[in-house]
Image (cartoon, rainbow, N blue to C red; front, side):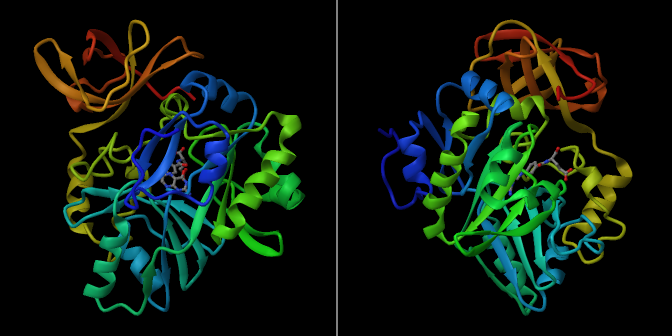
Length: 367
Ligand code: THG
């Protein structure tokens, strides 16, 4: 059963048969590809993610591959994060900005070799920007979207499950690094990363033919661990302060507004697009920034729009993601707040779809 009308514009993934058989209840669309959003219920999925292990079809985290002598130069043009110390086998969370310093994407850069990179993208058409830069500057580099589909294994039991398939070697992989490991005679990048704070791995499945065999192998090996098909969980990711491009930020925001200033080395990232604009914003400092916000009252409704944040009659920001947290017994949220009202402990009001609620700026996220 699916309420999304079938269309070639909304791409299936190499794991879609497994996702459907597991009883997916809702999808979203991400990079023009299906991404499951609910299996049992957001709350049930959340408790299970935090106590067991889940296998996530995150094929929609498409790769932009850079291949050739100018690959490293192009990668540094794309991000204000200094990549000079980045060795092959490393993954870096990298802001990508346009010439005005506006966020275009917040992907994970994967360095396979000096002349071969993957950019594991969030939901925007980054391939077009990268092709445009490569061609405009006449760089000696091939830019395309390879047949690579990430499969995430997340949760407290993720390491044991991934070790059961790839061997105990995966236990030595450090956070945001990857190693090459064999599955059915093929070598795959296995990274310790993923869009949750529960710990886990991402397997970059190169070749769609390997997808369902790997899916079945993980489900079989994980039976005793109560492994389930899962998906990025909105409640857990807000608790953990993980940003969602298109929701919590857009090209109207600078990395500094998004709290990603720590990933900008604008002084030393020579040649990066948007450098002059970022040098300006870094000097002045942002006038609004992402904050953790607690919203009073019972469970907030879901939403497809930002909710105004008020201080009396004045609009001082917007809530961009919010959910009821069963573990914290409150609504956890993130939002963009003006500097006059961003200090921890500041009392605010939020215009939710079911009325005005009291809210408070938190010191930190919840995890
Ligand atoms: N993994 C991979 N690709 C992705 C995502 C992913 N592409 C889309 C989307 N997620 C990109 N956005 C993010 C956002 C946050 C993180 C990763 C990708 C993340 N952040 C950690 C944090 O903020 O705590 C760690 C950042 C760090 O310290 O380097 O993991 O999840 N392949």
